[in-house]
Amino acid sequence: MNDISAKVTIFGGAGGIGSSVAFNLLRGSATYDIVIVDTKPNMVTSHVMDMQDMAGIDGFSTVRAGTADDAADSDIVILSAAVPLRLNTSRSVFLTDNARIVDELAVPLIGSGWDGVLIMLTNPADALVTWLHERTGFDRRKLLGYTLNDSLRLRTGLGRALGVSPRRIEAWVLGEHGAGQVPLYDAVRVDGSPVQVDAEQKAIAREYIESWYVTHVALDSGRTSTWSTGRGTALLVEAMLAESDEPVPVSVVLDGEYGVKGASSTVPALLGRDGVRDIVEWDLSAAELDALHTGAETVRGAADSIQLGRP
Image (cartoon, rainbow, N blue to C red):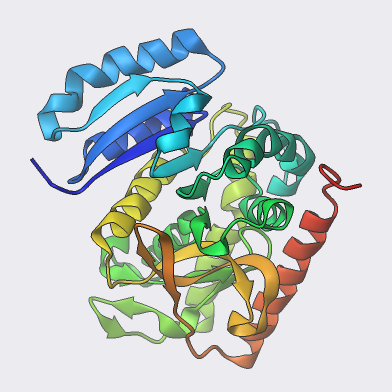
């Protein structure tokens, strides 16, 4: 049995993303006690019955139904609870409604003295992480916003532009999880070697990453990025437990890094069991740094607009 283990509670675990996270954790190399919490008990039971049958195939992890009380002794709490998806053109339309969910679930947990790591999947993640940090004073390094999909989509877009498999591409998106994303085209690598991305190739990649969300939501399928977010979140958790020396893109409240203070933005970070071990500051171009600052201002404004908990 792998001696790396953790208790992980997933709020909203009966939804598409929450259940995908649980499934991908069960298939991971670490040993997890996975607890699924949701307001839909029959759906929770359905997922648990199904996943318990496959849990023994890949490792020694367990999965079970639970309640909010399970979060109290959890190493990691994953918050994927959210209002139902509806047709929209920006994650920001969910800000007020989802802030109420975060207020109901995360604020009491943090207020109880809990000292684990919270991974925010609920959108808009940057603004909600910023607001939650301000609302509770919780250690910013223990509040992680999930934004890895931006970089995954850039790799897919670049794969189309360059005519290679996205698996061979290393590419990063920093900044705001949304319209203010900052793709680092000058840092693209293929098979570990730097490549020059020309204007036409950038346009192809940019069109893909900037249109992905609106195109997907317009399908009105009732689902969001179930598989990529589930797999990506499991990768973040694995990087935390392994104390990986490879940086990963994650949204964290910045305190002067990259010239940003008091707003959560995606940056390269080294993760550990206690969250962010270190924020890696890369040299960005003036245009990239400008775009990152603009996105941070948008995030700060969105967080300030949340009136919950204010006198």
